[in-house]
Amino acid sequence: MNRKAFDILGTVVLVIIMLIILLPLFWLLVSAFKSDFDVMRWPPKFFPSEWVGTQFAYVWKVLPIPTMLKNTVCFAGAVTIISLFFDSLAAYAFARMDFCGKKIIFGIILLTMMIPFQIVMIPIYLEEYKMGILNSFIGLVLPRAASAYGIFMLTSFFTGIPKSLDEAARIDGMSEIQIYLKIILPLSKPALVTLGIFHLMNNWNDLLYPMMLTSTQERRTLSAGLATLVGSNAIKYGPTLAATVIAIAPLLIVFLLGQRFFMEGIATSGMKE
Image 1 (cartoon, rainbow, N blue to C red):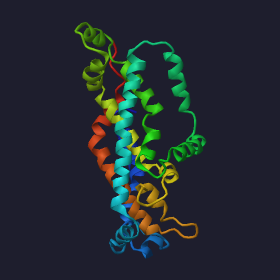
Image 2 (cartoon, rainbow, N blue to C red; image 1 turned 45 degrees about the vertical axis):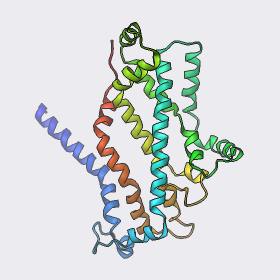
Image 3 (cartoon, rainbow, N blue to C red; image 1 turned 180 degrees about the horizontal axis):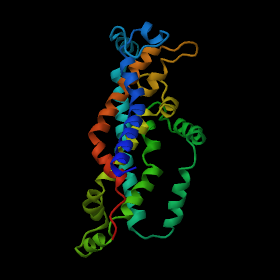
Image 4 (cartoon, helix red, strand yellow; image 1 turned 120 degrees about the horizontal axis):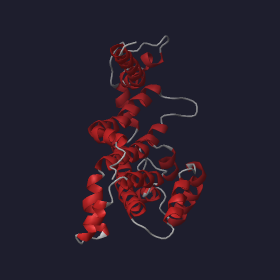
């Protein structure tokens, strides 16, 4: 097989994989505009016999969508910004500074990545209960103010930046915080954007964590609000599809706007001396 035929075959395989990945998303978008009859009919039809917006109207009526959307933006946005700040500070210390016990502390942080959330969820709940911050914005953000994965990822990226830049900056009289702000952070934009998208997606889509720490609809996020449409004896399929479209649309827009940085962050392994 010559190179041209191999490239054509590779393109066809990639197109097929792309269609397989995008098909469920397209089906979700189309099905959100189906009537209850079209959603439940058998055999199923991909496109609706009549395009309707009743599912969106129902969701808007039974759920406080604007409040939940505001809660989701505040929760996921605040966690992303705060966690990026603390993760990058910790990563700078581990990657660019020498201090006693650095390897041991970094190893302990890496070990925490292996602990499932289900193991720590009860201690977190009890701590927040004792502190009196359950069902509050602070209670949602505080446990996620830093991320072991974020520290690990940024430490790996910062390590690849030539240390000669630090040494030149110190000779010029810069302090550590100035090196961090004026040299390391500008060079790490792709990694920071990539990590920010990861944080935003994880917290935006999280279900168990906000459901555990909130008890009223006024504090619930979109993903937690969606769960109220699924009862123990019946599932409202049409409204659930419409609510899912509402929930993922802002996140999809953010990803499309930041995909260039996202790809750069994934592809960049760091500059080497």
